[in-house]
Each structure stands twice: as C-alpha cells, then as structure tokens.
Image (cartoon, rainbow, N blue to C red; front, side):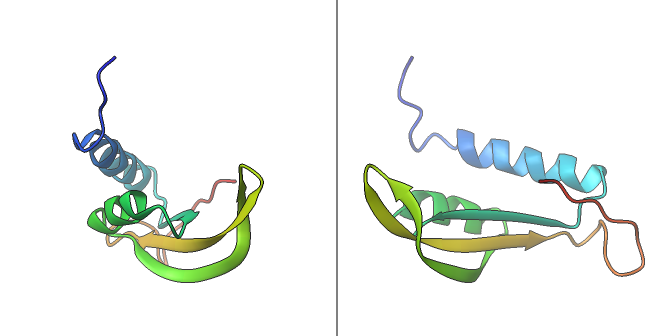
Length: 89
C-alpha cells in the first residue's frame, strides 16, 4: 500500500464524518491530540475545529507523557439550545 501522507484522505474522511454527524443531529464534535502532532492539529483546524483547552501530561506514548490539545467543532445547522442533541461516548 502506498503512503497516503499528505494526500487529503484524512481531511476528506473528517469532512464526511462532520456531514454525517450533522445529518444525525450532533451539535458538537470533540478531538484531542498531542501538542507535537502538528499535522493532525492543522487538519482539524481546516475542518473547522478550534482549540478550546489544554491538558498537561495527559497522553502517554512509548513511556513518555505528552501534553494534549483539546479541540471542538460546533455545527451551524444541527443541535443547539432549542433542538434535540445527541452525544456519544
């Protein structure tokens, strides 16, 4: 299998997830990633996510604790204060 890095596949899948989530009535999507993961952070920001928080030493990988950035995206067409909303675990 060829390396799919920087081919736009991840962003395309993320945009599809957003579309499906809005069709299903989800208002908020959340993501978290290690602060060193600039590629993921850039991809999520391109999809409309914004940074909303930070956790110190929250992600553990290969015996090392990493800081984590919290991001979220609020739908402009689904959910909200007067519409039914859903959440997933």
